[in-house]
Length: 242
Ligand code: DC
Image 1: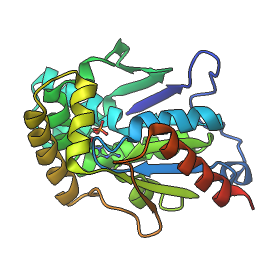
Image 2: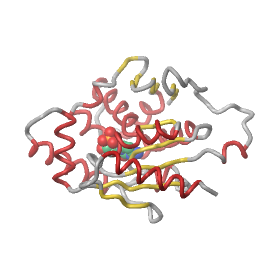
Image 3: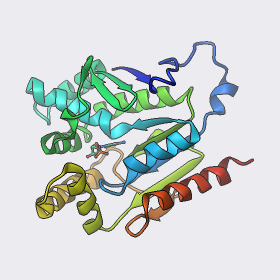
């Protein structure tokens, strides 16, 4: 997979680590790993925390969604592990500010539908797809301090991350948030789909969703977005102050 990241119009840093970058310089990058289930508030909070810190924001779920969208469009069976891996390696995924491009096409809206959500959860169980994504996620963050959100960032992608947060919320609250995000009334269907997806994400053999032993657990059910952001920023300050 070729992966290029453009951090927004005001901050277009190089897409790949400079070949001559010293190991010392790479070690200085700070990684804030935010994991948790759907509807735990990860995306909104991670994006805002990245903005406040001046770090890169990387939504790794969007990468799995882009691969899933391509698989659906090309009619690849979601259990054809070999072809899914090939697809993941070939996919050109770019973040351009708030937009996500797949092979040059803006798919920001297309990857958010329920069909793609379900397919992304299936595609992300494929070990070959995960390896391709993981490699690129590590490469992107090797020369940028980053806030990276997903399911396996603190456990597998960056087990050495300086800050690890596991965000969670009650199932009711997560369903409420997801329904509001999608602009749908039928919370029960949303809750059922989310439950299925969660079960798959938590029980798959490869990098299942789980809290890293050294991650801070934050239940966001009764917290405002600002409170969650402030709590994470406090952790970042604490962990990076020496
Ligand atoms: O965060 P999201 O809902 O956009 O993620 C879509 C799917 O991708 C989700 O079902 C789990 C999967 N995923 C993953 O397995 N690992 C990640 N790091 C991020 C997402």
